Length: 468
Image 1: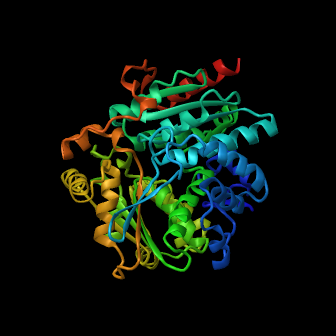
Image 2: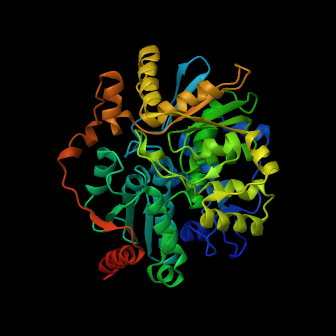
Image 3: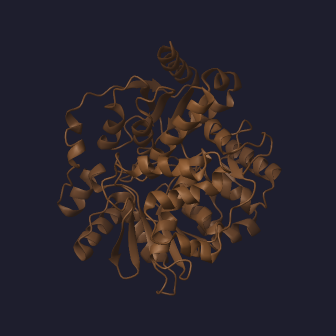
């Protein structure tokens, strides 16, 4: 299995090379040269497997034998063994035909744990084998950072620097990052938006001397390994609901497009996913694109669902690459124009191919609170703001054939957003016992302006101090 850049001007790599590289040298994102395809009989053979076994078998389709399936199984068992639910990702029926795929039973109570816990194992394995050390830099709108920190804390060959937008995460999200006092972890609060944080990370990767000096790697969903590790939970849910002999639909609250892209990849691998539904908040660039081919950047507006407060959806580039027939030159030109003008010129025929499968839905903060209230009132289900948006999108855009179940990605535990849940329902969801003292823990972070030079200096200082 080899991987190529969406922009066509970076060397092809194997899976381990892609894991360590993160972003391609030409600024593009890595994609498989060809898609692994499972037959209906092969999908049926995966039904009923424990989650770690299913994850190992599907991940093996992307690693080309390095790591091999036996090693992946060992890693998956270690990654998911500490989750707070025996099923790892339980499927809960919320109403007729709509199911919540609970992805928040990991250590940081968000879906990012599903991939990140496995990535921590993968990094350790590859770095030990190569005798190398890396500096991981990541941008987070709330959940990626804490999941990466939890997965990589205290690992001897990894330094971690996470950028988050100052004041734009929930308190629980911030504290889950800043109260980890491990020597290899450093948190930077950037005076800006998540898009600013994401731009800074990309700029560091595009600074070739700095990238080489620091041996940068990534845990954001720009890293293909993150996407590959998210595919198994969609397969797990679809198989439980009758796939491949029964089609399903998937609804995902998303801002950076990576989570819903993983469902699209599962479809490319042969799962009968008939419809992909994207839930958005007031930062609705993806919904606007699907409604009117309007992929134009507007200001990022804070909302009750801060993990979706994003305008530049990095992973959309991977879908664009496919929509343009894997034309890397056209993809690169389109992304350059998007960066220069703030508007992405997607050809109408490519846009129509996207809208044949993807459907978008936007929900305001008021609508989000009402949906949280409705879910609790009608189904005794307590949902966080992101999951509530996914549920509303599922009801609005479910397939006309009501025999096709809709899987909603429940991306965060309600206790991560207690203020919104309490405002909607009167119930303040408690943190699990292992996090009960979170508000009393010491915090450690650095506040810096949105300036590349200062951010790079902070990263360099952290990595050199730990390597000394």
